[in-house]
Figure 1 (cartoon, helix red, strand yellow):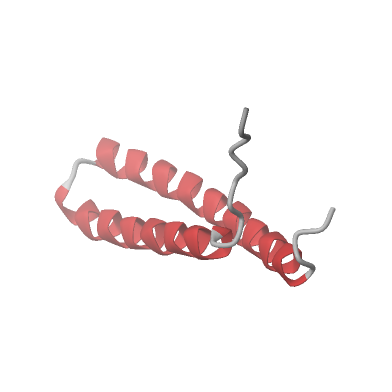
Figure 2 (cartoon, one colour; figure 1 turned 180 degrees about the vertical axis):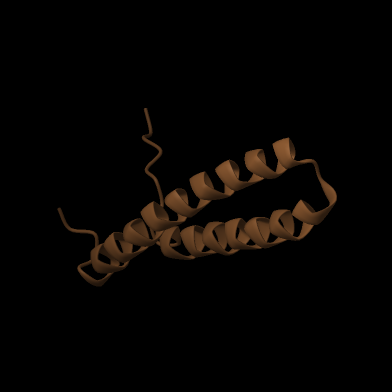
Length: 75
């Protein structure tokens, strides 16, 4: 049976794309806040806060992945 190993070589780039997309989503939703009810505005704020927390975690993971890449992914 052949094992399917995760190809880690492009993890940094994938994470960077995810961060970029999340930042764009935050920007788009903030622009829409002028056109929604106060209740919807609060939901958007909460969601954007969760996005910002996720971005922080992804940036930390990007650093870890970059270090691992430099070391040749050795354990």
